[in-house]
Image (cartoon, rainbow, N blue to C red; front, side, top):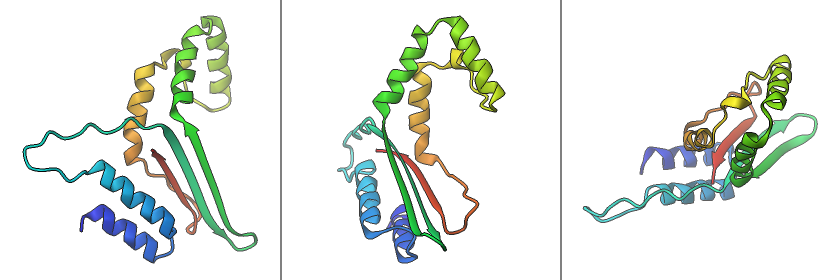
Length: 141
């Protein structure tokens, strides 16, 4: 049994994920690591279609809580392309407001290839949460 599959089963045993979530994660592992015959060329990884953010927590007052957000990556890709249509003066004002709000993003430097690099790196994303009973998952599917 590989390490990732073992971790999924441990999370299921600890009650940190549901059986349905474990099944989905194990299926995703199977798609990422297809069993192929020796000498066969590896299949390219399919292009992800959605950014998924799942937050689960156990609250003493309200009971279990769950947030499940699914954002089409095509929306993000289109947004990046649209920034090229915004006049430079407007981008400068937006950047100024973003910096004033504590968001250090320079929209003039945002390029379509950057969003693709970000999507590729989401497989390794780890999120720290202050609540010990809360869990955050961010991944592409």
